[in-house]
Image (cartoon, rainbow, N blue to C red; front, top):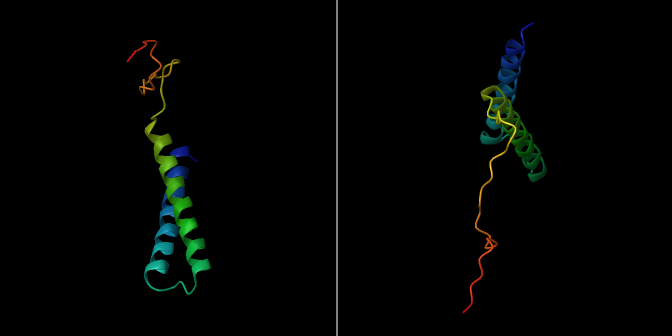
Length: 83
């Protein structure tokens, strides 16, 4: 079976389960805080998984061997100021 077909089936299954959790939470299917926290944690995990699958499929990783260097301005640029 093609990898993309498997991934798409997995995404559909995760989306279906996530939707079921959301419906349960919104329609009063949660009767205590412990169950609410459990379902909320599951929903977050499924959303993270879907995001990671999308990131992998979009191939957002860098293709070059060097990384990007970003100067965040930490004040250690070698210059000295005297007041």
